[in-house]
Length: 160
Image (cartoon, rainbow, N blue to C red):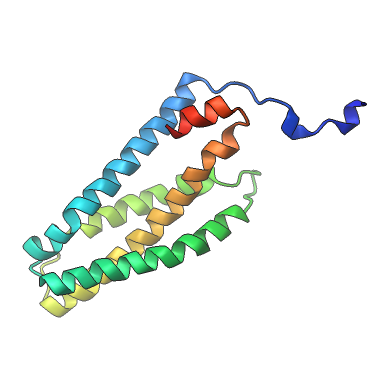
């Protein structure tokens, strides 16, 4: 078989070194810390800090979760079909949207001391925007392991 018929996928990519694996570990740990904190504390924040009734706080979380389910598909399609000027596909999403994601996380847990109806409206708006940026960062990040290497051992190491 001539060299012209060699499939690019059959060529092994270089082994991923510790520094790059540590970068995946750091982002994954921080992302999961944010996710767990939001999951555990957000309802408490809505009810005990913002003084929103339990039923309304539950509706805010349900609306955010439904929005997240819808935008997962849209953002996943967008991310999979987007190529940036530098030729990359996923990493720019993480680089560009991590700061807005962090800002919305800060806003998510901010008490603006407004009237009850306005507090509920602002809480819904911020939660929806947070979930959007959360998805824009999470979907591309979760696909990076498959794009970084074609070595199964490295993919497992990155994703663990």
